[in-house]
Length: 206
Image (cartoon, rainbow, N blue to C red):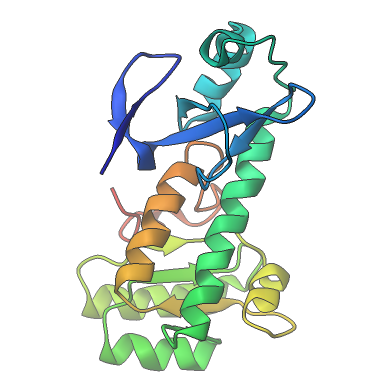
């Protein structure tokens, strides 16, 4: 894994722990979470605090060696791009047959295999979520959990109207999702803060 230097802290970190930024044709800083945009780029550790610090300290202009202007909502732009990247990976897993959705299908799958990820809609029914998590707790020692997408968004990703419960199999796509969720967690909680702490803490990945 290649390492890059954070322009705020000066630390050398794996690319998967940072976010790349470039400028558009108008000199406005924009996130490049897939690190594919052409031209000179700079890297910032994947946290809202450090992105906002880079804005306040004019770190982008120094790092890009140009009069780059960073918008105040830059961290929110990063959040939206990372959410989209995670949803794209869910779509890839669905097309690859690595994803099942719906309460009964997820509960059945949990009984036969350890999930790579459990994804519950943030606005889904508490009862269904608790039943699946309780089943997992009785069968598996650790199951990584996600709850930062609503049921309509998950439904669109899975080609349905709404989906409250999703299971992703272990494998390469699940590993990639974990890396992107790790970055996303620096900008927004990936498990809602209002969810039952006693039920959730068993499943959150360190």
